[in-house]
Length: 102
Image (cartoon, rainbow, N blue to C red):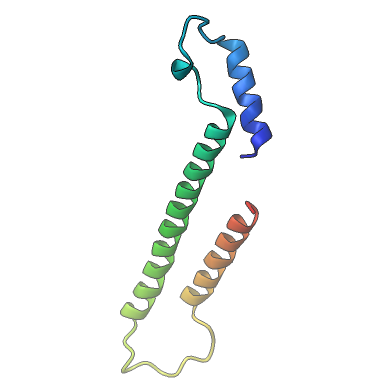
């Protein structure tokens, strides 16, 4: 979230719910810079968790694909297996999603 978005939301909140004039400064809402820092930290944590979950999902697909095949009695593969195509597709989608954020 940009500084302007958080600034807009803070201004809108102050207009809709005016701060108490008798409140001490420590009781007032945090500054925009504090909100930006908090939002940045939260977004980074959410993004990290999302990538971890997607990575676990992709690694599970690879694990299942390798585990279910009888490698001793199988013939040499002639084309790319469907599971590996799916893994590449998932990684491409993830890269596009994360890339669009930066």
